[in-house]
Length: 309
Ligand code: GLN
Image (tube, rainbow, N blue to C red):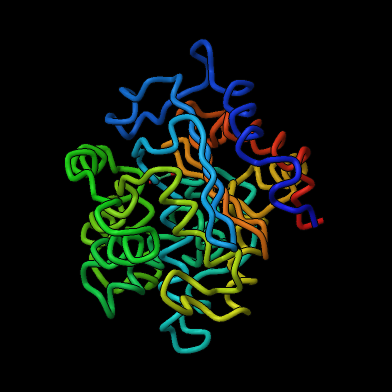
């Protein structure tokens, strides 16, 4: 393993910001989330929260952005930590999908059991599962993220959530499919409404890196165990195989670390035993992953030697 201060991390992050901050518009924004189209393409931030308790930041690391599907890592952790063994895993698989994050195709083939918790169909099941114990799972997620990253930080952008909800035909279709196969206890509408609010949580790179640190510390969060060591390992494994949807293989090849992306342009990455990294750049590639963010992580892992391989 490479010591965190050799070469010095602060100057290296500054370097990465100047190498990767987009100079001209390229890539796309998601069509179903109107609020994201207004975020300037040149935003770029990076933060590294270390197991030793330091946080190194550069660029727009303190600008809040929409976490979108990065929420799926945390809702999975919340669902697993108070689950009776196997209950969730009878409702969702743990296999890479090889299809888009919002794909309907496999749901019919697999009889309403989503391929994994990090595609939309899987996250809708996780949300329904969480709602058994906490009817407002989005509020519980916000509490969890606030506890891990510091008070006053994360908040729900309710206007963004409302505008995404008005464009949720696809997620409603997924939820109705799940319902028809008996894999949703609540109404499709109530689960999608809660799920969209989870996705609309706003956080900074610094806060997300801190919130994800428990996954690099064998499940130990800001105030004690969040999940067991084994669950932390398993969540990391699912991030590696499923965290970037149908680009999981390419991301593993380029970065060599477990990661989870969101269409807000954020990517959370775990270096087990060492640190959690969050990078943010809003424009996306064709798979819905941050273009510049992925390139920056590839450079960071090459320069530091951080990898699970
Ligand atoms: N809210 C988004 C959606 O459901 C999340 C997708 C993502 O970040 N990949 O379409």
